[in-house]
Length: 276
Image (tube, rainbow, N blue to C red; front, top):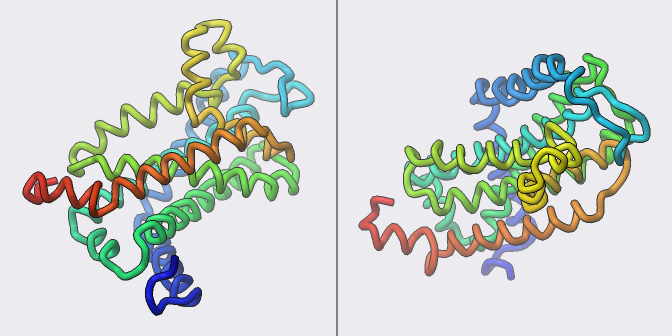
C-alpha cells in the first residue's frame, strides 16, 4: 500500500536518500572501512598460513579437487564481513535512536516497513562493497575465482547480507541502551561465526564434537557461508538458499513488528518513561 499522494517516484527518492545517507556515513567513518578489511585479512594471511598444514580440506562440494586452506576460508571471511557490517549497521540504529534521528525517520509519512527495508538495503549495499574490496585484495594473494564466479556470488552475497542485516535490525529493536550493545554482540557474533563452516568443514566438526555439529546445523550463518561458497564456484546450494530466505523473512518480520508504534519500540519507551 502506498502512502497518500505518494507515487513510485517519491518512494525511489526516499530509498535514494536513505542509501546516500548510509553511504556518506560509511565514507566519513574511514576506520570502519579499514577495520572491515583488516579483520578478514588477518585471518587470511596470518591465521590461514599458520594452520595450512594442520587443517587439511578434503574434496567436498563445491570443490572438485583439493584446495588450500586459505581458499577454503575465503567464503567464510566474506560472511564475516557481512556479519560484522550487519551488526555495525544495527549499532548505528541504536545510536540514531538515542540521538533522535531514528524517530525523525520513523515519523515520516512513508510506511514504516518501507523505511526499515530501505535502511536494510542501504546497509547491505555497503556490506557488499566491502566484500568485493576484500576479494580484490585476496586476488593479489593468488586467491582467485572465475570472473563468472564473482558475478554469480553477487545474489548470494545480497541474500546473506539481507539476512544478517535483518538480524541486526531486530536486535537493535530490543537493545535499550547503546552501552548494552557490545555485550549483546559478543553473544551473537562470535558464537555464530565459530559455530559454522567458516573456518573448518562441517565433517571435521562432526568428527570432533557431534553436539557442536548439531549446533552448526541450527546456525543460520552456516547456510549463509555455504550459499556464498557454492555461488563463488557458480553453483547453488538449494538448502542454504531456502534457509537464508526463510530466516531473512523471519528476522525482518520481527524487526518490523518490534518497531511498530503500537507494539514495539515506542510502547517500551512510554512504559519506561523515555529512558529506553
